[in-house]
Image (cartoon, rainbow, N blue to C red; front, side):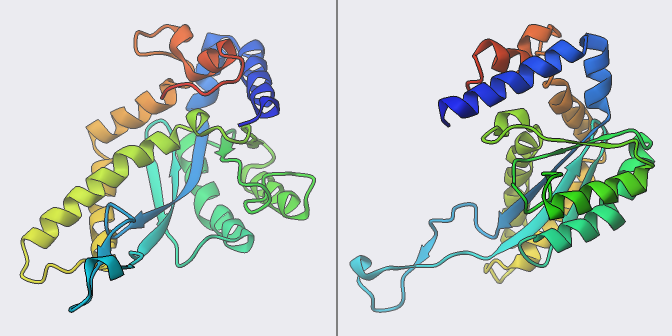
Length: 248
């Protein structure tokens, strides 16, 4: 991360904290929809290797495990998980946004919500000055009557996107479910079907009381610390550090 990136992050956090007081900021993030893409591998480690019979250890050949792509969307009290067939391109994103994300967000939050996307350039059409960005903004505007807004957090800012912390909780739970599933059967080989089955199990858990509490705490961490003070929020700490990364 360069000094220019830090300056952009610092200005972003400073503008948000200047425009909203504590009550308004809370209400703003309570109306946010955080969206990002995640690949769940079959094995916890991508460094998994397998030796062929008769090979010496020095002649190992790495085996890249299969992965299953998902698109996640989360609010302060709900999570939506969409399985993808491939790495998402702009056309896929426009279709999913139009038919899946916008109707779900309207149902959960009403029409005046904010779409918080990671810094993925023009792949997700985040920049309204680009052709893809104009199409994405038009989809959101059409589905919400012009009441929703696409937020543009700065680049290199996973600490300002709470869905990254959701991934950190979600993946270990999936791996644990896969290990339990494989341990109960005779065939110990793992497949992508195991990932899909176990990811659905974990998704249902996030619909419970503990899952909703976790989502609410993640969103609250944007503007408030564990002790309830605004000085502990991510935006405040990033501003105080002049745009440097903050712990999550």
